[in-house]
Image (cartoon, rainbow, N blue to C red; front, side, top):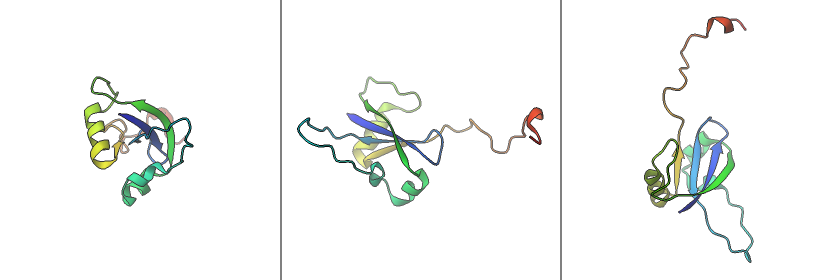
Length: 103
C-alpha cells in the first residue's frame, strides 16, 4: 500500500496518512485537498496540511511511533490515519527552569 504523509500546521508531531493514488506517466496528476477524507471537525483541528513524503507500507515495515498494521487498517476502513503527538513529552503545567524565569 502506498500512502502520502502530511504534517499539521496547528500541532507539532501530528501527521495525516492517506492512500496515494498511482498516476500513469501519460496522465496529468490532479491536485486534491488531502484533508477532504477527514470529518470537518478534524480538518479544523489539523489546520493546513503540508506534504512530507510518500511511503510504501507493508506488514514488514517498521514505523517509529505507530503500528504499521494499524495505519494500513485505518487507511483502508476510514480513508486516513492521524498520528498524534506522544503523551507526556511536554508538561504544560511544569515550572520553568530557574535560568528561564522572567526571560
